[in-house]
Image (cartoon, rainbow, N blue to C red; front, top):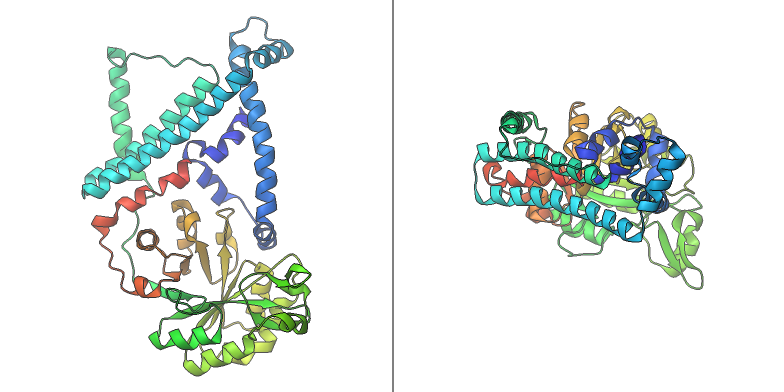
Length: 428
């Protein structure tokens, strides 16, 4: 049963996966390592998971034979389950899982669509209860079907009347207890992603900074990489193409080598222009597995005076560099950039969070907002995505469409349906 629950986690585990992921204790160094290596880790885990899932589907009737067979010897039960799980049965089990995900998604999307058409708080409230009650029930029914356990009932039987009554009561209770109620949207802090608005310039360049600082948005967000010889340059990607050498990581190349093939701008020049223009920055300090262990300390020491001229902030996936910067410049705000909705990051000592918008869940927001630290979402470019993030309680958004976010008008009654879509992250 424990193994079955583990295998169900990627399928939502009846809505508990989001809660479990958010509650797992995690250190700053482990968070950084997992984030940097997320692609090979996810590929490896996906491969292992598929093998285990195929094995589980192959012998999925193990529990059924264990209970129903008079000879309860494990070897006999395992043999019966294995023989019963041929290739056609394996495909049938896979289709049941696909059907479970499809049914869950259709229920959530369907109710969201109804609430988009009908703006009624009571219907929206009951819709949450229906999702929290019906979706786990559907998933449980299909899981029992996969295990070979028959689920038969007659809805018209009087014995079921109390069950239906309790079910309707549970819908109301679960609707009221749902953590998906959202908040009254607050004015959003507009953060210009890479200094560019609607593709009007090249990102992370002084030209883009000068062009768009005239709009006086609260922050321009930009990216910084450290070279092998400890120069900080403005660049987003960790790698750069070198002729006859392919793509190579910036932190393994000298500034001279990079400048031989590419025009790059030094962060010191960028920061000096931002201070002259009066444009505060949110600086993302990029990390790889080969980043220098004292990068944060060196960054703070090099730019200590310039970083304190305006309310500049620094964020990164690298927890250690952030702590080093905070130690060198206590007045500066440092924030954690997340790309994975994983771990109890509320316990980490930072001043704010920058969450990838597609990973934001109610449980994650609930764990972070209690600390009173600002939460920013990135990168929100669609209007519906901007509204959803604002209604979930974020303080600001990193966007390529700063003008669109600045003019955003949010009607909580009209847009409440977007919050129902959050259940897709909980149940799928």
